Image (cartoon, rainbow, N blue to C red; front, side, top):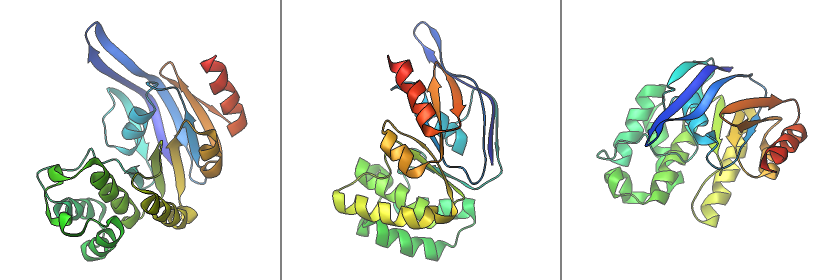
Length: 217
């Protein structure tokens, strides 16, 4: 279970503080996969990063009672001066994962080859995303977090990513944001709408979509 209690997020702006999230309170229970709809700039990605611990809230509390992934493909937490292999070992120590096992999986799945031993700052955006996605599949999580797309890269890599993700999510839940209602229906059981900095949860995906479309009009 993941609990959000009065989550606020603000950023400094030229005209003062910009409020992205305003008192977001929600509970995500194990056994439910949740989709979050919202317009561009609504704060969906920010909410996900706060939820999984990649970014701190300005105010409020996040309680995690389940092992939660970082957003799939998100590479913003990598230490750019360290190599891919060094970042991998650091992640393994944090999550208590077997370094040799994770190294074998990530090296094979990411297709980075010798670049695993090069500094991450030399990676392209796609290479960083492949490393981040492979790591998130190598370390088993109870909740997988998806920001818009399941994986980046060429068609072959995306197919491989979808296949391994289907295997992993068999015993895990999903929390995702997406503009695609079809994608949310494919992976989620319930949905909510983030609008005006506030998150409203609905019992069904169709009800959430109706309210999302109403907010757009």
